[in-house]
Amino acid sequence: MSLAHLSPEPKRPRRVNRYRIRRRTPPGAAPGTIIPEPMAHAPRITLTHVLPETIEEREVQRPEMIRGWLSQPGWIWCDVDGPGDSQFISEVARVFNLHPLALEDVVNTHQRAKVEEYNGTLFITARIPHIAKNGIIESEQISIFLGPNFLLSFQPRPGDVFACIRKRFRDPGSLLRQLGPQYLAYSLIDLVIDHYFPVLDFLGEKLESLDEEVTHTDARKVLSEIHDLRRELLYLRRILWPHRDAVQILLRDYTSFLTDAVRVHLRDCWDHVVLLIDLTETYRELCADLRDYCLSAISNRMNEVMKWLTLIATIFIPLSFIAGVYGMNFDPDFSPWNMPELRWYYGYPFSLLLMLAVAILMIWVFYRRGWIGQDWPISDSAFHRSPAMRAESQTFRESTSSPGQK
Image 1 (cartoon, rainbow, N blue to C red):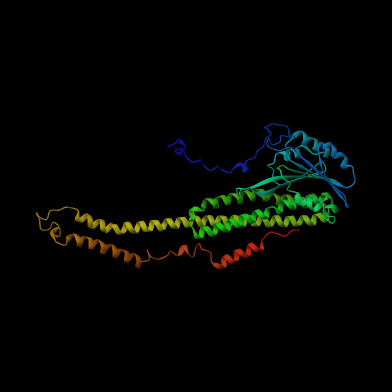
Image 2 (cartoon, one colour):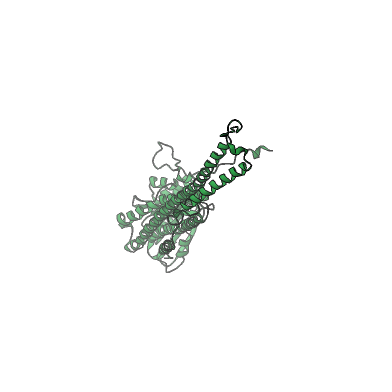
C-alpha cells in the first residue's frame, strides 16, 4: 500500500479572506501613499465624450490626453479599468486634481460604501456583489469621482460591469445625455444596488431548498450548509448596510452636486436599499430559525434513540434478574430448598417462557402508557410548517421580488 492512501484527507479551507482588510500601506507611511495590489492588471481608460446630440467613445493611452477633452463643450466620462500602475493612477489624479487620500482609498479596495468631498469633487465608493462559480458571494469596489463636467470611475477587476450603461448612452433619447454627469453617477449607484437583488434571490431559493431538505431528510446532513448560508447572509449584510447611510448622506448633505431631477431618481435608490436590508434581515432570521429547527430535530432524534435504548435496557433488567437467580448454582442435593426446579423436567423451558412473558408484559405496559408505538407530537406540530404558513411565506416572497427595469 502506498503512503498516499495513509495520508489524511486535506481539510476544507476556511473562507476568511473576504473578511480580511488587505491593506498594503505599511504602518507609519505618509497619508495618500499609493500602493496598488500586486495582482491588479494594468489600467485601461475608456473615455466617453457626451453632447446632447452625439457621443464619442474611445480608448485613451495616456492620461495627459484627457486634458484636451475637459476643455471641450459637453462633459466626459472616464472609466479606468484596473488600478495596477501607481504612476499611471497618479497621472490621472493630476489631470482631475484628485486628493491623495481619496486616491489611496481607490487602490485599497476594502472600503465600505461612503460619500466624501475633496476640493470641490465628490468621492463615492460602493460595493457591487456577484456570485462566484463555487456559490460564494464576493464583492468588488466601485469608486466614483463626480465633478462639474466630468465623472471618473474605477473598477478594479477585469470585465466591464458598466456595459448596460454604455448601451443606454447609444440611445439618442436617453436621460444620460441630457442630465449630465450627476445622472450618470445616479445610474452607476442604481446599477450597483440592483445587483443585490439577484444575489438575494439566489440566497432565498437556497434557503427554501434547505427548508424542504431539512423537513424530509436527516437534519444533520444540512446543518453545515445552513451555517455556510448564514455566513453568506452576514457578509451580504456587512457590505450592504453602509449603502443606506451613503445614499442618505448624498441626498441630505450634497445638494449642490445634484439637480432636483437627479435627487428624485436617487430617492428610488434609497427605497431599494431599505428593501434589500429588510430582505437580508428576514433571510437571516429565517436562517437562524432553520438552524434552531435542525438542532431541535437532531436533539429530538437523539431523544428517540435514547428512549429505545432505555426501553430495551429496562426490558432486560428483569430478564437479567431471572437469569442471575438461576445462575447461582445452588446444589439441590444438599437441601430441598436449593432450587428444586433445577431437577424439574420442564425447568429450562419454564425459565425461558417466564422471561418471554415478562418481556411481553413490559412491552404491553409501555404501549399502554404511550411510550412506544406512537409519534411524538413535537415532530408534527412544533416544527413542520402548516400549509397556511407556507402560503404566507410564498406571498411574502412575491411581494418582495426584484423590481423591473427602469
